[in-house]
Figure 1 (cartoon, rainbow, N blue to C red):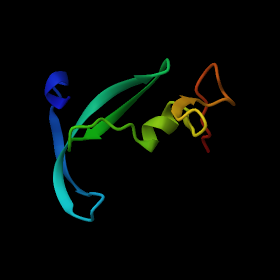
Figure 2 (cartoon, rainbow, N blue to C red):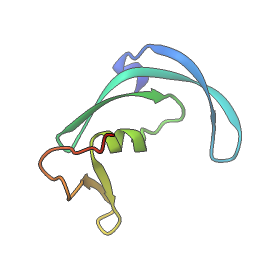
Figure 3 (tube, helix red, strand yellow):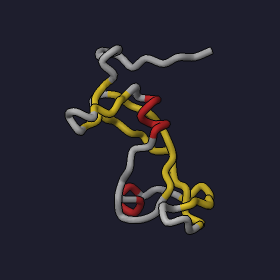
Length: 87
């Protein structure tokens, strides 16, 4: 996906993967992410062949996981426009 989107490497970051190994991987961005009509800007760690939507981007777009539907949905408490708590 990085190649398809022609994303430049901003820097390299160390990550710990699920089996406990540490790897240094490219960090690219900014990336505009749109999901269910909501948008945010974020960066991405490049590893593996899957695209994963992280918790920070989900929170920024005010999306939640619906376990019963097994899908990502808009926050039912703010269905029309993303909402955030700022202090």
